[in-house]
Amino acid sequence: MTIQIITLFPEMFDGVLNSSMLWKAQKENLVEYKLINLRDFGIGPRKQVDDIPYGGGDGMVLKPEPLFAAVDAAKEADPDAKVLLMTPRGDLFTQEMAREFAATEAGLIIICGRYEGYDERITSVVDKQISIGEYVLTGGELPAMIIADAVTRLIPGVLGGETSAEKESHSQAGVLEHPHYTRPEKFRGLSVPEVLLSGHHGQIEQWRQANQK
Ligand code: 4FV
Figure 1 (spheres, rainbow, N blue to C red):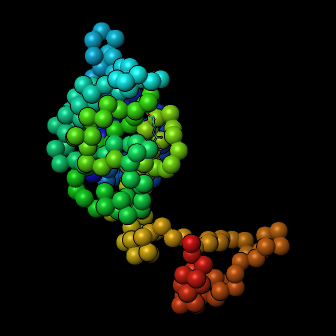
Figure 2: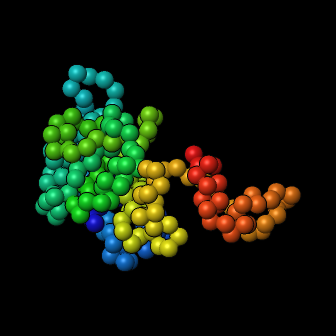
C-alpha cells in the first residue's frame, strides 16, 4: 500500500514514519510513504499557497490551485488511491475506517490543512473528510500521522506474532482492550489476577472478555 501525504511540513513526519513498526513495515515493503510538499505547487516567485478569505475574517485560507495540483500529481502516481481530507468538519476517524482503508489494495492520499483551512472547492476531488476529534489543531499533520499509524498496523503482515490483524479484527471492532499484566507476579504489593496464572485458557478468555472496555 502507498500512503501519500500532502503537507507544508514534510519534516514533521520523519520521527513517526521512520520508527518502530512503521519503519519495519517500510523495510518489508508492506507500505510506502510518500511526502508531497504543497509548497512545491505554490504560485509565483514566492510559491504562494494561501490567500485572504473571501467574505473577510481573520487568518488565511489554502488556495485551490496548489491543492488541486498536488492531488493531481499524487493521483498520477496512484490513480485508484482514496483521497482523505483532514478537517474538524469531517467524520470522526474510527477503527472501522482504519480496517476499511487497510483492506483495500488502493492507496491513500492524505491532505493536511494549515491556517484557517482549505478553499472548500478541494472537496470536489476528495473521497472522505475525516476528523480525529472535536478540537482545533494548528495543522492536519498530526491527524495524518494517526491515520498512517492506525492503517499501517492493520496491513496484513505488519503486526507480527504479538497480535495478528486477523485476531484484532475478530475482537469486536478491534478497539476494545482488556487489561494486560507481565512479570513480576508481585510488584509493590500489587499482584496479578490469579486466573491469568492458571493456564486455563477458557477462563482467561472469559476474564478478558469480562474486563475489556
Ligand atoms: C483537524 C482535526 C484540525 C483546522 C485548521 C488544521 C486544523 C487547521 N483535522 N481533525 N481536529 N485541523 O483541527 O482533523 O488548518
